[in-house]
Structure formats: structure tokens, C-alpha cells
Image (cartoon, rainbow over all chains, first blue to last red; front, side, top):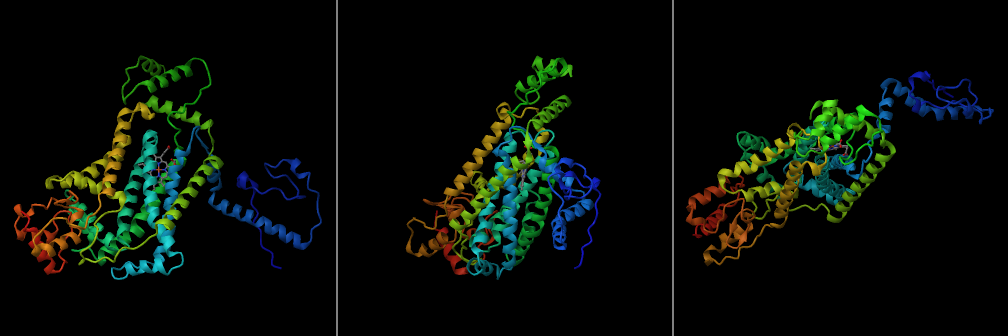
Length: 318
Length: 233
Ligand code: HEM
């Protein structure tokens, strides 16, 4: 029997959640393991097979430890999973991850469609017919991609509405809002470029009008429509251009920006609903004066109005 | 936001966070439930509504519906509301561009510390008006169908031209007598009193502004179409 070399990792480098429990009967108490845990398991006699089994059981943990020793991400992962979300977080806060999920559905179904789709003016239409009529589950996947786009557009608007009405774009999350708006534009670009790909009458003529609409824009308009059309008439080159934008350019940008968006969400934390206030511990003077300042400010309508004498005093005291 | 407002916000946020629950499993549960609903809805829509193809794209055809996907209706309808040709660039690119810039820069001009919507009257009103406007335009787009019939009575020799106009999607953007959508294109009911036959042909072939070019129509059809339209004065 070949024996697999087992890397030995010093306990100190493995973060507690990934640390494997001490083996029964083994000497020494690993860090974080109460000695009382060891009492229950009496020493056993082991056959060679048992030992191998044990080793097999440990392998995943060992492998995890091995990887983590090199990547050092488990601290980040556990920090991310067990970080606290503020009091009052409710269902409105699921809209962002729902958008993300809709995007994942689009990406996955899109990969399957790409396996059968041919981006050429002569074959695009028939390749879609092939997907619909002959590929197993083809129409289901095609339909999911088609309707998923509507669902994603609805969700992204709802998510934007939530962050808008909750004032979540304010300090310190301004940049996340800006990234969000770019994601919105990119999502609409996906919707526009994807519409041409089935190459049926509807998509053909709607894209012509869409490109012409771009062309009426001031200054860059004509250049933009020339770029999109990729020739004097909408045709084969237009289709491959839309395909490249829809398949490579924009999805890449979206994935990168979602990454940045999520990084900021984890880094800054999500807002609490604006109506939720923390009950502060009742402590004497300086803190309660600060309190008065905040509440005083809160009561003033409008942006930079500071007329309230309460807020003036409160701020003065800080 | 003044520095002390920022400080106050961060302190308040720290407290709220201490009172909060861990992301896993509480938020993760909600997010997963929502994810399941999203997939279920998408699969259901796919099964119920399907993914049927329309007829194959054909530049020489005479029946089509040049309509965008529903989530672009509000842009398309904007053209119908703003019609004078000199204003079209404003409607097509101007308004959306201005709106996008305003949206992008929002956190940089709305910097007050207040977050409750009922205490941000300007922002909240603007948001609600935008939603109503976009909803209304989308509704207009959804209900404004693309007629393919022209009820107008015409002399026998103009009938073929009438059929070409009715079947070529012109009515999606032009009003003609009782039929057709009033915009984005100009009304055609009395087109001959405004421009001569040659100009009609030129417009059909070039496709001015956002109008598609109909250059690929068979010449005979273009002749018939021009005969019909130039009889409308
Ligand atoms: C592909 C599109 C998008 C994805 C996948 C996405 C995802 C998320 C997720 C998962 C969160 C965490 C909190 C929550 O779910 O509410 C979040 C927060 C946020 N998003 Fe998005 N988002 C997208 C687009 C947008 C857009 C279009 C905007 C606004 C223009 C935006 C602005 C924000 C802001 C300001 C936050 C912080 C909210 C808070 O702390 O309460 N996002 N996003």
C-alpha cells in the first residue's frame, strides 16, 4: 500500500475554525481544545485498515489546511461570514444579492447557449431554431436566458430604488453607488446587444431603430451608431460585433465591477434602515450632549439647514 | 456632511452593528430564500412563456414590428412625447444622458446627513416622480400596439400602395388617418401637402433620423407606396 505523505502544519498558522480536533488518544492538547473533550474517547486498538480510514478522514481537513497555509484566506472568509449586519436589516436588503443571482443565472444559461449558437447572419437564426427544437432542454435554457434578462432588469431597478430611498448612497458608500450606476448602464447594454442575437424580424428592426436613436445624439451620436452598426447596413458584421460585446466585453466588465461592489459591501458593511436608531447606553454628560447634537440635526429638514439652536449647541460641544 | 456628522454616523453605525446579527446564517438564509424565488420565477416564466422565434430577419420584408424590448419602452416613448425634429437629439440622447449623469453624481450633490426618505422631501419627490414617469411611459409603450390595417377609403389604384404602407410597419411610428401611433415620426395623413413625391421616396430610401431605411423594398413596392402617399393632401 502506498502511504501518502501527510504535511504537518503547525497549529499556530491554522485559524481556529479550520483546526482539526485532536485525535483520540493522541498526546497533547491542541490550542483551543479543552482537555475535558478528550476524556470521552477511550483508546482503541487499530488495524491497518482503520488507520488508513482515519488518514482518509483527515485528508480533506489536511488539504484545506494546506491550501489555507498558502492562501491565508480563511481569516477573511470567516470574517466575512460571521461579520455582523446591523440591527433592522430586512427583506429589502436581499434585492442586491437577488440581482447577483439573476446575473449568475444569465451567465450560466448564456454559456450553454453559446455552445450551440452561431453568430453569423446566415446561421444565427437556424442555430436558435436548433436550440429550441432539438437540443435537450434547449428551449428551457433559452427561455430562462430570455426571461432572466427581464427579471435582472427589474431586480436591478428595485435594488437601486432601495438604496436610493434608504439614503444608502451617502457617506461612506458614495463610491459603491457610482459603481452601481455603471453596473446599471452595463446591464442595459447587455439587454440591448442581446436583443439582436436571435436575428429574427423583431430583433433586426428594433436594433436598427435603436442604433439610429444612438445616431441622433449630439457630437458622438453618429460615431456611436457607426461603431455599433459596423458597416453601412445592419448585417453580418453588426451581428458579430454585438456578439463580442454581449459575450466578452460587457460580461467581463460586469464581473469585475460586481467584485468591486461586493468588496465595498463587505468592507463598509450595509446600512441599517434609516428609521432604526441605536439605543445608546445612558451615560452622563459628553456622550448625551453628542446625542442631542445628532438628534437635533436629524430633525432639521433639507440638506444643509443648520438653523436649529439645539444642533448648533450639540455640534459646538463635540 | 460636516466632519462631526460623519463621526456621528460612524459611531451610530458601530452601535447598530453591535446590536445586529451575524451575516451567517441570518442574512444568508434570507438571501438564499430570495435566490430560490428568483430561479423559480425564471424557470416558471421560461416554461409558461417559452422562447419562440419570430420570422427570420429579412431586410427586404414588408412585415415587422420595430419595437424594442419592454424595458426600453420608456426611451422609445420619450420620442413620441418630444416630437419636433430639432428637439429629437435632446429626447434621444440628451435626456437619458443628463439623467445618467445626475444619477451617477447623486452622492456628490446630495450630501446631507439625513437618510429617512420622509425627511428628504426633494430627493424623495424626485425619485417618486421619476418612477411614475418611467412607469407611465412603459405603460404607453406596452399598450401602443403596431397596427397593420389602414381604414382609410382610397381610390382603387392606390390600394396596392396602401397595403405596402400598412404591411411595412410604418404605422408603428406614424399616424395615418385613424390608424397608427402618433410619433415618433410625423403624421402622414396629409403628407402630400407638405412634401413632393420625390421627397417621399427619398425619405423612404434614406430613413432620416431614427427611421430605418427601406431601400431594400422591391422598387415596384416603393413606387406603389409613393403613389399612395403622394395622393394624400
Ligand atoms: C449587477 C448589479 C448589482 C449587483 C449584483 C449588486 C449587488 C449588491 C449587493 C449584494 C449589495 C448588498 C446589500 C443589498 O443587497 O442591498 C449591494 C449594496 C449596494 N448597492 Fe448594489 N448591486 C448591483 C447594482 C447596483 C446599482 C445599479 C446601484 C445604484 C445605482 C447599487 C448601489 C448599491 C449601494 C449604494 C449599496 C450599499 C447599500 C447599503 O449599504 O445599504 N447597486 N449591491
